[in-house]
Image 1 (cartoon, rainbow, N blue to C red):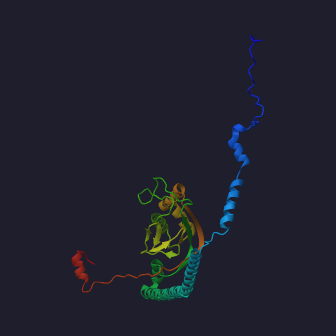
Image 2: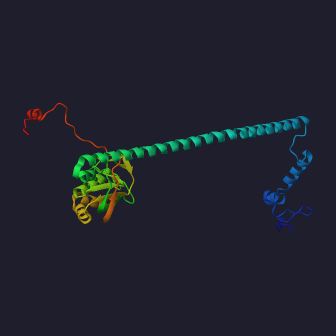
Image 3: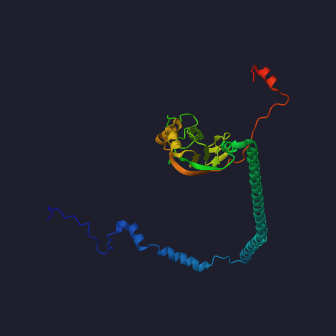
Length: 313
């Protein structure tokens, strides 16, 4: 019937005799990677290796001769270096042994000189003590004690002063407020001076700091961060031994201005200090004691001196 519309053909169905389209045709790249992975590459590399051989050594005569020459040259260099090192080893060992022997010899010489110095020092100290004994009369013991020329022992006190556990750059204020005492956690030479002077003022008869006997000529100074007593450096803790009436000396020192100064250092700066009364403390004699005495001026007389000063005798 001509008036009725004709149905459209179904284009989704394949034509008869045509190849069927794969469902994953739109993912051809991914399909190629999955189906042809690295096997083809490996096969191609194996084929090339079969053509040129498995060894990478040169096949020509000139190449093989060059390789052999390089190997021979390398072997010669290694052999010569080993021979030189073997030849130089005994020389270095000899030089090292010479240096060791020289150091040991100089050390023995220095030890011998130190023993000689100590012996001479003991001789000089004995002569000085004898001179004091000969010219001191009945007061020789008192003179030796005052001059520190003889070791002493007796009752007294033991004062130990140490830096703070964590020495730090502290704030300002307190008894040590000055430009030279910013490190508030460390014991300074000025602190030790006040401690020693406080013990003298409290009645101490003899004092030593870390085994160094103090005399009227002793000095407590600083060299950098170190404290020097008679130019001998000391390390903390500083042990101060004082001979005297232990109970009275301890009480008098702690009640004095210098004892209160030390207490302030403990409270404000963490410096550690302890005072104990001892039944017997032993102090050595002062080393290298220098005896000084006055002499009359030659040609002077009492009348001339009286006329010059305007004073009578």
